[in-house]
Amino acid sequence: MSLYWVFLGCAVVAGTVFVLQFLLAVVGVGLEGTDMPDDIPDDMPDDFTGDSHGSTALFGVLSFKTIVTALTFFGLAGLACLSADLNQPVSFTIAVIFGLAAMYGVHWMMQLMMKLAQDGTVRIHNTLGEHGTVYIPIPAHKSGVGKIQLRVQDQLVEFAAQTTADEKLTTGTPVEVIEIVSPTIVLVIPLTTQVDVRPDSAEPEQTAQAH
Image (cartoon, rainbow, N blue to C red; front, side):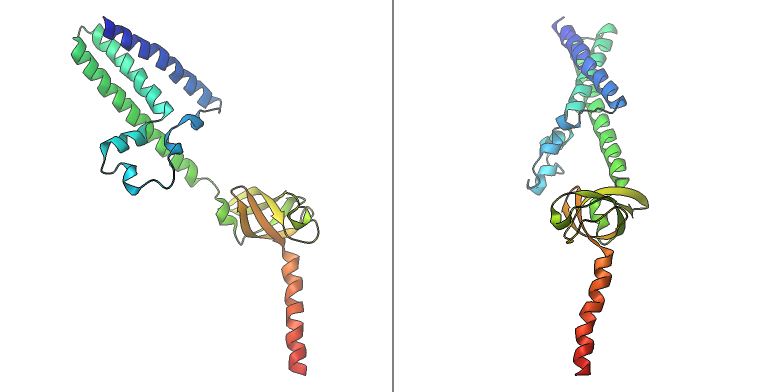
C-alpha cells in the first residue's frame, strides 16, 4: 500500500507541475532557466559528454523538465499497474521503465526543438562586413547605442550598434559592420568615411610621382 502512495504522490505533484509547464510554454513563458545541462562549464573534460560513461550520459539528460516528466509518467504507470492487479515489484519495474522512456523522449524533443530554433536564428557574427542603414541614430565616439537594419541570412533584422565616427550617425546613414562588440551589439562605420578616405590616401602618391 505504501508504494501506492508513492505512485499517487508522483502523479499528483509532478503531474501538476507538468501541466503548469505546458500551459506556461503555450503562453510563451517557459522555464528554460531551470534546466541543469546549461550550467555545465565549457572547460569540462571531453569525457564528460557521456559517450563512454553511463552516469555522465544520464546527467546530460537531466533537467527540470525531464525529471518532472519522468516522475509524472512513473506515477501514472505505477497506478495503472496496481489498478491492473499487478504485484508491487512488477508495478515498480514497469513504472521505472515508463518514467525513463518519458524522460529520454522529452530530452530528445527538447534537443530537436533547440536545433531547429538555432538553425533559424540569425547569428550576429554573420553581420561582419555586411552593409546596412541606421534605424535609430547612433551617438559618436561609442558614447551610446543606436540601431541598424541590415539583411542577414535572407532576413531583414535589427541590431544594436555603436560607432567610432566623429559625428552622430543619423537615421538612414549607410554603414558597414566592422566588429562584434558583444553578443547583442555591433560596431559600425559610415560608408561615406571609406569613400572620403581613399582619395586622400591616393593624393600623396600622385604628388610623389610628380616630384
